[in-house]
Length: 218
Figure 1 (cartoon, helix red, strand yellow):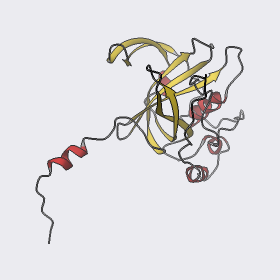
Figure 2 (figure 1 turned 60 degrees about the horizontal axis):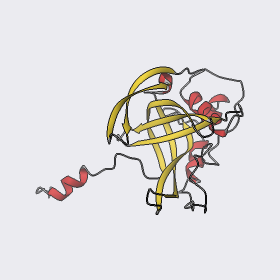
Figure 3 (figure 1 turned 30 degrees about the horizontal axis):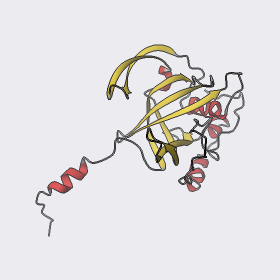
């Protein structure tokens, strides 16, 4: 007998109850809405703030710290070049753009002038994201937990190849499944006494972000 349905308003509400933020470790397909150049006012470290949106309209914001003020390159630079490889980009250049971004003081999105990398935006890409919870002190000096996300690995959304497979012209996409098999939540990072939460200089370890050779197949 074919099932019949009576309206369940609670079930209807649950359908709209999805979080707009990605909050779990796993594989996501989507695109970067924005890729904004950032610089630490404290250390002078440079990086790129990636605003990612998956196919379910869930979002994540990830910052890649690419270079110290001294010019020393950080592991986030490897991740950036892996992203460029997966998107078949040989170079990227920031341009001045006006983008609507959330402002904590205003409590809403407001237009902001930023330097952004348009070539990284609006192109399909796959990410392995890793939940990395860590403690922090709120404005009342109470310990809270922030569920941060780290970029574990990236891959071409169509071929499912990671950067090293693309660069080596591999015939098969084998590495992604192995990376997924080792992907799990990070252990809670406790707040050290007398220390603040400094931004991470690079991605999660173990994600296959090797140094890239100059043999570019695109």
